[in-house]
Amino acid sequence: MLLLVPWLAGIGAVLIWVLIPALIKISASQMDETALLVLRFVVSSLLYFPILWRSLHKAKRISRRNWCIGALLLSANFGLQTYAILVTPITLYGAIFAAGPILTLIAFSQDRSRLPWIGMMLASLGMIVMVGGSSNTGITLFGVLATLGGLIAWIGVTGWMMDRQNDLSAAELSAWMQPAGLVSVLPFWLMRGTPHSFENSALIPVVVIGAVVPLSFYLFSTALRRDARIGILSQYLEPLFAAACGTMLFQERWGLAESVGTFLILSGVWKSTSLAESTENLV
Image 1 (cartoon, rainbow, N blue to C red):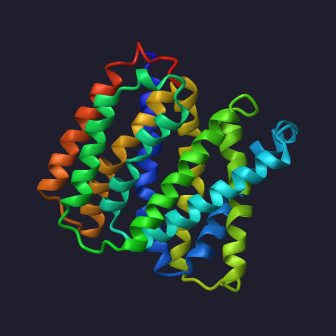
Image 2 (image 1 turned 30 degrees about the horizontal axis):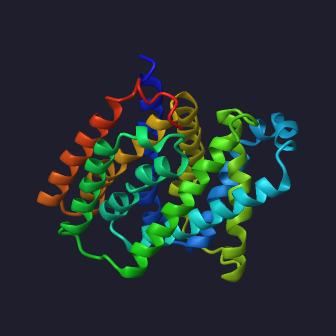
């Protein structure tokens, strides 16, 4: 039962993250992507303003340097991810991004000798199979590099969130990441010449993104607080959900590579979590 909460929180965050690329693809076809990001953070900052106001005194305890680091990491993360989402099939985007858990665990583990290496390697192999053997087209070098760059930035964001756990609650941390994100994407919007025209139909997905992304950060932060290792490993499920989403919404193909990769990823996640008790304080 103790392991159920971080798993449910982690899976809930992953489900939301998988839907975001689909919503971004829909909105970006009707408005500039930098305007999309700015509007999305404005919406989320307004929706979560009550939490921001109540926790203002706590946020002031965090140094300006740490806030600047967080904003820079978010800027790199959102900028690169948004570009990658627009030029890369969702199935492959999710599969490449699944390299995050193993890199995150290696980066933040207190004792790397106790890492669930077999499970992590199985899941990583599944990710490689899904990317290398996929029958989907549309892979570009810049798309892959942007995804990898966004992945590295996300690992930094994860570490930043873990370091802030004693400063803010999960809900407060999620809320404060929204204005920090707004500050981080404003330079991209300004460099584009502040584009602001868009179709009214684009507003619905943008509002949905603004409402649910903070919820995903809250769920992920909750998973990290309950069991950081499970919170990190839950991200291995992202390529599975991404492949299903791409197949259903964008007619992306589900072939042998996706099936084999799914089996390897699930096997790796099961093998990793079977060591839950012995690695309780791993990160």
